[in-house]
Length: 65
Image (tube, rainbow, N blue to C red):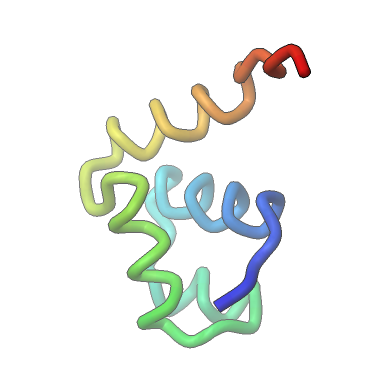
């Protein structure tokens, strides 16, 4: 499965906001299982972990080359 960082962040954000997996899957046109796996990688079903994952991604400092 090859998804962009933007789609991944949108999935994690929607799950953190309390949207059910099936709803998020429909919004991003993916299978529920794939959305669930992405959510689990970010801490789903713990909404606090999901929020921290979203915050960390948004506030990540670019690494010097």
